[in-house]
Image 1 (cartoon, rainbow, N blue to C red):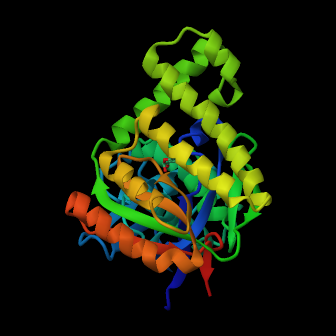
Image 2 (tube, rainbow, N blue to C red; image 1 turned 135 degrees about the vertical axis):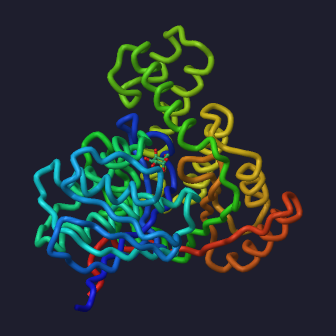
Length: 361
Ligand code: GLA
């Protein structure tokens, strides 16, 4: 039997970082790098996983009531299967073969793309139509509760709801979004520092705990509801204050950014990107010297509106808004400047915004 193929894109976030789990605003676009799952049904309740990226064949039983994470890539898929079933979607066994051109762990949502593509494959093969928002929430739950990273909804939402040539302003409380057409003759250029600092998961969860502490101290349920006045009035320990200040102003920047895009004011949008980066570096403390260098080199180039780190941080990528005609020179300058500063050759991707996950027919 010919396998069916399901594809889920990664995403790049233009602005609105570490705001999603504070019920705030984010502005990602789904990108043409994606994870693909080739899937054939089985007539039992076993899922057999293979991947181009890893040599092992991993199996799990959908009826295993005591499934525990194995700390492998398969956890993302098994978690999704578990939470599909928990939500009442009964899935059948399947053979899944995963391949991806998304650089793993570089802040472009390789995890969400794996979750969403596997979730689509398992559900569609079982004859189920899971609405995109349900699928996104199930995948987030798998990551939060099975994999153990308390991530927000941005990545899974972007992968399921992306639209060609658009970014999305997502309201992570309402779980709705507004499509924002990307300006013509502008390119989203992603620069990969090629470093991953291993702090990632533990520091991520710590940031989230800091935000919860800040919200409690200010008497709000979520930092989304806190204002700069409240922040000024509340006595907070310095680290918690810095985290809260980042989130409060990043939410404002993201909403102003949507307005700037609508007004075709790319200079204003770019300024917000630089401010976002500085805040992530100095207040939220999730940048690193490689990301900072990448942004500094970018800032000195012609034809660039703005640059910032994108995704969770501690390595990974920057996002740069570059004039189409400047992309060649920009790429060269970043490659040389970054290599000179670090000894590392970066990867640079000129991205298109694409539609969200679906079956490849
Ligand atoms: C990771 C998480 C997202 C989001 C970003 C930071 O990508 O998966 O939910 O919190 O970090 O903005």
